[in-house]
Figure 1 (cartoon, rainbow, N blue to C red):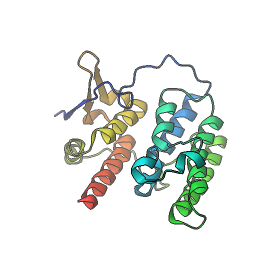
Figure 2: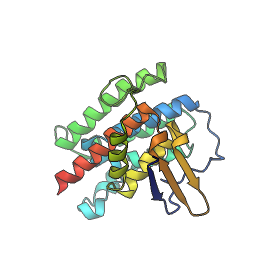
Figure 3: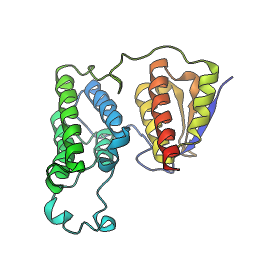
Figure 4: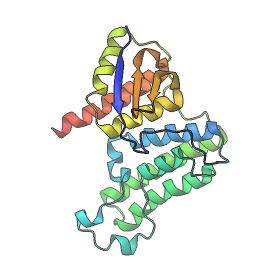
Length: 225
C-alpha cells in the first residue's frame, strides 16, 4: 500500500524548489555535501541560537546592530545555498564563520553563548577541512556510515504519521532533503502548489536520515510541553 503525505507549501521559497536559473560554479557534489552538513548542524538541539537572525529588539539588545555590522544565521545560509547564490565552498564557509564570529564578538569571552559558538566553530572547521579534500566525506550526524537497510511497512507508516505532527518549517526541510537525495519520492503539483511525499519510494539511507531528524524534532517539541 502506498502511504501518501500531502504538504501544502504556500509558495514560500523555503519549501518550493523550482529548478533555479541562477548559475553557480560550485560542483553539485560539493553543494549537496554542504547542504547535508549545514542541515545536520541546524538540526542539533543546541543550534537554536544560530538558526535565525538575532531579534535584538525583542531581546532588548539595543547595542547589537552597532556592534554586529553583518548579521548572519544558518537559515539564511541554507536558503542562499539552495538558490545557488554561492559561487564556491569558500564563500559558504565565510558566511558560516561569520555566524560564530558575530556570536563570539557580541558575547563575553567565557559566557555560555561564546563557548557554544566556539564549539560549533571547531566542529565546522573539522568537517569543512574534510569536505574541501573529499566532497563525499560528510557522514551522518553520528559519524556512522549510511544505513541502506529498507524500513519495514510499520516503520514507514509511523514515519508518515509523524510528518503530520511536525511544523511547516521542519516539513520544508524534509522536502528539501528528499528533493536533493531521493527526488523519486516527491510528486509536485505545480497548479495546486502542493508536494506529495510517497514514503514507499524514499531510498533506505535517506529514510533513516529523515526518520532520525523527525524523531529529534518531535522529541524537542515534547520537551517544550
